[in-house]
Image (cartoon, rainbow over the protein chains, first blue to last red):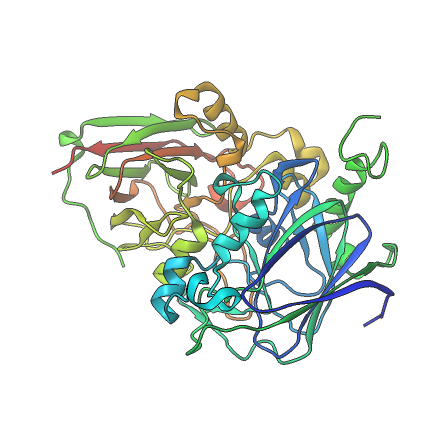
Length: 248
Length: 214
């Protein structure tokens, strides 16, 4: 794994949320500090938030059920928000959804803000509502999210199971943004996490500048579909690299 | 698991054939039974459901998979909403399994999957977009178009994380039937895809049939 210069670093405790606009060419590294973390994430085009992360297109375009190095995360418009340029884990989930308040209450009991202050049991759905609301997004804008560091395995008959040992301490995944992207994220538990207590796994977030996409780039060449996805991004950026879709 | 329905089309309150490449949108009342028939076999019916009272609450593929504990939909599967409420339940099925991971075809995803020059071929999402424009009384827009069910479609996944679009497991006259557990809007694109085996490269009509609540 290369070590590009990181320009900003922060730790998000478990059960919290954040959002930011990643610029084209930015690198985002997530590190699972203690092991067993989950990072729920959604992507939107900040110039038109009707364009959003599309899990089914991402999976079917790359003939995969899991996400790992080489895979690109597609919008519903055939464009690539970001590429997974490094991954020590091998399997990230995007089919099992998000945890909500009722699920947290049923599994671990609801710890209210009134009683526990910032030790309350936040849930992924409310986290996305809060972060999305900052950009005018609401319930109608939600989509199937990524769950970084979490693994949900299908058996031969399609039955799904959660693998709690998927992500050891120090695991990391690097995303390179291929267009300007609004990123919503939370560190609330995966909805299938069977832990006895509400998990609070901290995640380190680092932002830096990615190396340019070379002709022999691993993600670009991972599948022929990705070459065409990158072509769609090139067309999008034809007139003014960061014009956000505005005409020439 | 397969199960035949006890209902006869002769006693239905509504019947409509939907040609390949067209959309169909209708409100279903709680308690009504709704059947989709694959008239000629190997067709994909790309289907979305919305709560009629609050369309921001809608079918959720990921919540349905998690709640049902299985990536495939079949007899007994409760189709869950984004608020984790059961919207419909599959009560009869002659196919065995239906896909909800593969999503719908769109002109844009076709450019990635096949070739940029395929961008003008007809696709499911175009049918949905025309539906929400022409039938604006349902108050839906592109914002509401999310991850659907592909009734009759076969998208096998493997324990090592693979996924493929395979030949259909459906056949002529096979059907899936569900009961509405809340008032819902149903939006179907009868898939026009010509680039993969989801329709056996030959899109064909479906029939939708509705029976009154018992």
